[in-house]
Length: 209
Image (cartoon, rainbow, N blue to C red; front, side):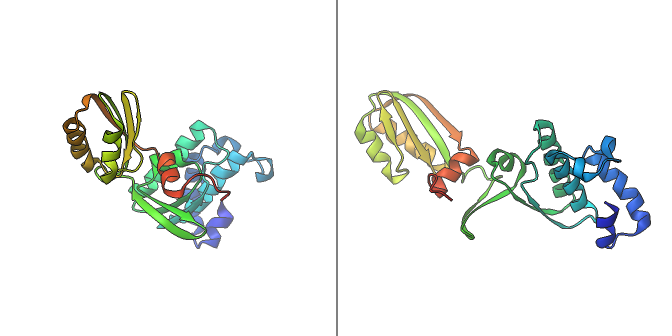
């Protein structure tokens, strides 16, 4: 930690304050006298995070910061990232653990072969895609096909209709259309797409990437 701090230009007096505080922040104080070669993967992840914070940077790049951590460790890393965000720091987080991204990040970017495919504001409500399950009597194939102006994923199975809408703003129009088409709707349940579902809908099924 002192080595990384000196390489970043932090003074010795400042390091004497920051190093113990950061080691405690990542939960490694009980292991302060151990060599890194004896650390587990999760402990190394924590040590690396502390090293990244030693000079109080304004921009932080983190690659799979929760890899190898148990649930408590992952929550600790999320709390640290949020604290940095509240300090005004920009954090770039790369991870395949989409559930972690979903609860941590404000903005998400999907990249394929180095090219940005799409981006999403995780704080947005009205413009986010939602999956909708409708329970209704007198559902017909025509009802599903009539939804093509709003979605191309409508499926009917007896009294159950499911589809994905690109925006919540379309839902009142869709409900009015169904009722106007003769469907006797008794349940209309929109659910926000998980980031994993959104990833699959945007990037497609696994193609060996």
